[in-house]
Structures are given as structure tokens and as C-alpha cells.
Length: 336
Image (cartoon, rainbow, N blue to C red):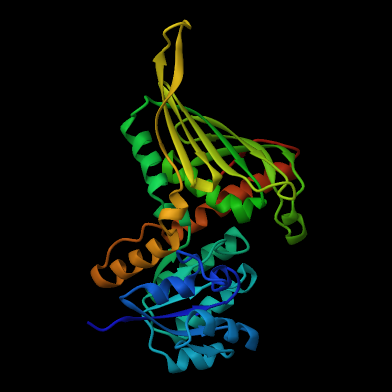
């Protein structure tokens, strides 16, 4: 069987450098394609010769370009990863869709710089009839799937509250956080900023807020922000009628608790029922994403992470920015 042909545009951290030096499992696009037996990494596009030299360390047989147009003219591709900064994303996608027939585009987040631009990208993809997969990486996580299943099956009763803890911007880490809540528990439909927390992302125009929120099903929550100059954090607690689920260390550890009686203390108390550890050491979400793309190309499978999924976090971020501008007012999340 012929291999599917892939290209990576943008050789920064997630496009390439996450795997230099080489890790046990692929973290970036280039190595994930190269390690997949059904894919040939045919080409990559960067902006400096240094990136070509680094590409040779990971995929020496891949052709390196510094001219996007030349790559699109010369290569016949099945999937293209877009790993460039979001501020050049729309024009780049216009060029790619007009000059390449690649049916699948694998898009890094944030999808765009604004809701309006994201909606233009959605219209562009529809016009060119392309399948867009967005790298909301936790959608390929076994741990996230276990949490989603526990919520949907009401293993611990109905969901009653959520508590989120995060660093690094409502667009950067926020995009993953808002999507994880939506994927596992339901859509956020109201937000209210409590305070802004300074982080390194302020220099990039991506503020970080602590805020109250509610889901469309009425479940309330609180997202607490921390300064990433002290430490990084991505955690989620889900509280139920008869238990609790904790996600720690960006999803590397997940603990499931059930409410049970105590032999010597009156009332019900949380007891550890099961836990998952070292999830990120055992599997690569990027590797799973590429396997999923092969399935899309081969069978026409529906994407696990669609362009609409990728745009949704921008609606939440936009509502948070509006709340902050309006002195902490309650704001509706558009698109819910």
C-alpha cells in the first residue's frame, strides 16, 4: 500500500523542536509523521536554514523548503500540518487551500487571532471542502476519555461543581482547558472575571484570568489562575453527588474517588477508587492524533477534534475579555 504524503509548515517547538533532543515518544508533528508506518513525511517548510539543519536530525530524508509556494507546487500531499503562529494563519491557509489539493489539514491552536478570523477560516475550509483537524491534544488522551465516560455514565452520580487551575493565557493554555471542560462535562455558557493574574503571556497580549463560570446544564465552576513564572499548572477537579475526579500534572495523573462511609467517622468521605499514573510517559497524544488522521484518510472517519471544536475556545476567551473590559460583568459565551 502506498503511504500517505505529509508536510509540516512551521518548524518551531510543536512543529519540530519538541523532539530535539529525541524523546522516547514523539511530541511534535514532524517526528510523529516520520514514525507512523502509513505516512511519508515528504516536505517541511521553515524560515531559516538552521531549521533545515534541525529537521535533518529528525527526518533526514524529508525535503526542506524556505519557499512555501515552491513546496506546494512540487508536492502532491494528503495531509498538511499548519504549525505557524496564529497571526499569519488566515493568509497561510488561503494560500495552502488554493494551491494544494491536500484533503486534510492538521491545525495548531489557537485557530486564529479572533472569533471573526476563525469564522472566516471556517468559511474558507467549507468553500474548499477540506477536513480540518485541530490539535486539541487531550481529545486523544485515554485519561480524558475515562473522565468523559464517568461523567456521561454518572458513575459517581450527577456532576455538581468544577474547579479548574491553570497558567499561561486564555488563548494559550486556555484553549486546551476550555475544550477539556466541553469534551468531558459540557459547554461553558456564562463567565465572570474575578481578577487578572500576571503571567509571561501578558507580553504576547494573552491575559490570564481567574473567573466564575456555568455550563449550559447549570453546573457551576471556578477557574483559578496562577503565575507561570512560579510554576506551570493544568488541573481540573470534578465534583459529583457521590464522588470526585482529579486531573493533575496536565493529565499525567488522574484519580477517581467515591463517597463511602468511614468506620470511625460519621458521614460519607471520599475514598480512592482507582488512579492512573504516568499516562504521558506511556502514550503520545501527538502520535495518536497522527494515527487518527490516517484513519480519516483511509476510512473517512469523523474527526475527533474538528475545526468547530477548535473555534469554540475562542468564544470563551472572547467572553472573558468582554467581562474584564466591563469590570467583571457576567458575559454570555457566543456559539453555545
